[in-house]
Image (cartoon, rainbow, N blue to C red; front, side, top):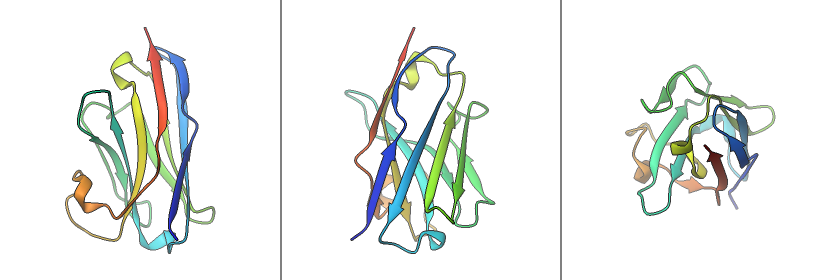
Length: 124
């Protein structure tokens, strides 16, 4: 059974930093691309970042480029999202997702497995 478990969310002031982690089990981790998405209340789930299976190819949403960094540790079956210079508009539930597909990296339907999410709240 595939499991993705996010952690590291919380309440932070604007301008602060958080690091999210997502631990995976039940899948050949190094063979999957990993993504982070987020969903704010009343809004659709949106793409944040993606990292390829080897960690050498990354993509970011324009809204987080230069502030967020995605990385992975295949030895630990874990993907990370380092978030800096956080803004109130970054407030959302953050989800990690895994895919073996090479389809559009920003499309939620391209991902096979999802975690339960972790709440990030940025106060102004």
